[in-house]
Image (tube, rainbow, N blue to C red):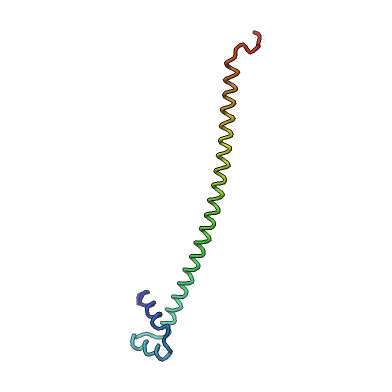
Length: 108
């Protein structure tokens, strides 16, 4: 039996009484225990899917937290780079200013 067919049988027999289930099983060539096993497998699969959804949701939450932390780190590093660049530009300007003035009061 395919998974789709098993699910269809589980759904069809969900509301049947024990006598009706017995008649259904004789008609289809099944045993009630098979249907119970298929039902258990369906419920187990649904439970696993719920667990997977919870795990995925938890992972998305952790990912958002990590992204937020990384963005904060990038902003901090951008500020450091901007400050370092400014200091470098200022030091080059200062160096250029003092190197341009040969008569700065030094006697040879």
